[in-house]
Every structure is written in C-alpha cells, then in structure tokens.
Length: 406
Ligand code: GLC
Image 1 (cartoon, rainbow, N blue to C red):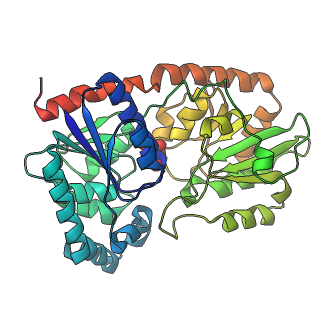
Image 2: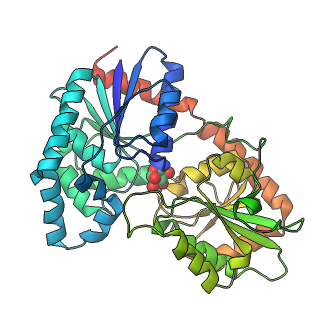
Image 3: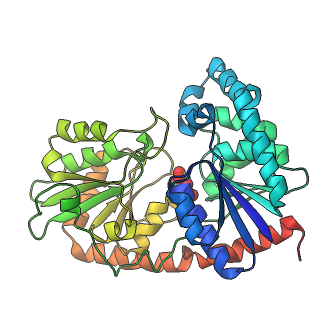
C-alpha cells in the first residue's frame, strides 16, 4: 500500500499535528506500507514526518497560491462576487496554478499511490485537480466548509473527484453533508500520543519564557495554547482574566504564535500585548511564543482555557490537555462539545462569554480538589477515546477498501 499525503503548509497547526498522529499510528500498525508526504515548504512538519520514516517531497507554492488564506478567503466571501471570481481565477485561470498542478500531477503519476489523502483546503482543491484518473482521493476535512464559501464553491465543483471525506467530528460531518450532497463522509476523531501528553513529565518555567519575574508560590497558572487566529478567542480569555476576583493570586499565559502566512485573519503579538495593556493586566500575562513541547507547557498550568468564539471543529488542545490531566474549560460549540462531558471531565462556557469564563476560572482557582477531579477524569477519557493507536484501527480498513485490497 502506498499512500501519498498532501499538506498545504509546512508549519504544524492542528491539522498537521493530527496528520502526524495518523502517520505515526499507521507506521506502527503497518510498517510495510509506504507513506509519502508532499508539502509546500520545508518546515517543521517535513522534519517531523521524516523522523517517522516518511518520504518527503517539497513542492513550493507559487506566491499567488501561498497568499490565499483559507480563513481570509472565508472573510472575503459573504456576497462578494468579485472576490469569488478572483479566487476562481486564481485557481482555474492562473498560469502559476496550472504549472503547479501539472508538476503535482507528474509527481503523483511517478509515485503510483494506491490512495491520495489531502489535508487542508488548498490541497483538497489542488489534489483533486492533479489526481491521476482512477486513484481514490480522500479529503481529510478539519474545518467547517460552509464558513469558507469561496473554497466551498470551488471544492463543490471538484467534489466528484473525491472518493470520500474524513472529518474530525460529527459537527463537521453535518456541515460537509450539507455542502457536498452525496459525498461519502466518515468521522474519525483525532487522537494523540497519550504517552507524551500525560500528567507526568517535564514542566517549563513559563515565567522566564515570557520574560516575567518568578511568580510567588501558590499562584494559579491559567493558560491558553493556540495559534493566533482571531476566532481562537484570546481577547475573551484576557477579558475573563481582567474580571477575576482580586483575592485570587493568578498569572495568565498565552502560549503559541502567529503561524500562518496570511494576514488579517490572525492577531500579531503586538495586537495581543496591546489588548492586555488596555485591560490593565499586562504585568500578570506572559507571552511565551511558540513552544516546541506543548505537553510540558500544559503540565505547567493549573487551568487550560479553550476560548474559541466560533464553533471549534474538534479542538486538539482540549484532548491534549485532558490527557495531561489538567482542568480544562471548553468553549461549548461545534465538535468540541463531542469531546467533553461538562462538569465531569471539563467545565464548559458559552463562546465569547468572558464573565462566565471568569467565574469558572475563579472556581477552579480556589478549589484544588475540583481541579484534580476534572484532571483525573480528563486523563481517563483521553486514554479511552483519544489514544492514537485507534487511528490505524479505523483507517486501515478504509484505505484497503478504497484501494480494493483485501
Ligand atoms: C483544525 C480545527 C481544529 C482541529 C484541528 C485538527 O485546526 O480548526 O478544531 O482540532 O484541525 O483536526
């Protein structure tokens, strides 16, 4: 079995972390399968996939393609017909895209994959355009399609070339079923390495990483770990911090960085710092930047906040923090709702409701037993539902069926 994965970005965001877990799980279960990855730049994703024994090909995007941001394209969308035409032009009418597609097609022909598995909207489109006839194509969809009407309209035109879609939650499944009527779709929840994401192990000095003085003993550490995409809710998080009761000794940490090449849909570090200043909490909020070891960062927190202001398709960070035995507060919308039982293995708040989030933080901050109880239940849930050995169990039969291999 030879599977070629196509990923549009060389950075490791949620969809790429999920892909690495798919590859690791398959590599272990089916060591004879040939797994290859085509990626647009030689970043950390290529390095990590290579370490898992995957053959890497870097096929750089022309500038015009690199600049199309999925979220930005979504933002442009609405009823903006001109924008829609522009995007279609960029994809179907641009010589640079045509050259890219023909290079990709040539590469795919040489590789003879049994299955092509694309990750990320640009590669769903480019993969469908470049795919040699007869080769099954899986779109692994990690985000809502209908919130990106441009891309959705282009994908709809190409959806007959896609054999099936994998989605990361039932919430995304419903969205995809509405967007592409008749496309076979299956939910495969993401999974993680629960030996890496576990309660025991290294911790980080988040204060010194953020350039803050050491916090006094007993300080409650509350953190958010996310890319700087605006909908991840950094502002809600900081507003909640600014509302905390004065008797709680706390520090907040914003862990992560601006990841994507496109502007407009994400905050810059300066934007976030100015929000913390405006709210009067800048001396108590640390910005660590991107952290290589998210598990160690999570273990250094007492409370992990997930604050997305829009429905979260899955929310890998939630599963990771539960596996690390942390008390997690989740924004209750979308696929994230399928990961938790509020009050049992996490707490939930209404998306964007900073006051409610502040109440939950205060409650957790002053109740170590509640934190421990939620953390232990979260760990148990992660072991049962989010251990990555499950990925191969679910995916191997799918690949075999699509490739017509018994
Ligand atoms: C995307 C989604 C996120 C999910 C990740 C992995 O980044 O926005 O919710 O956790 O993909 O599937």
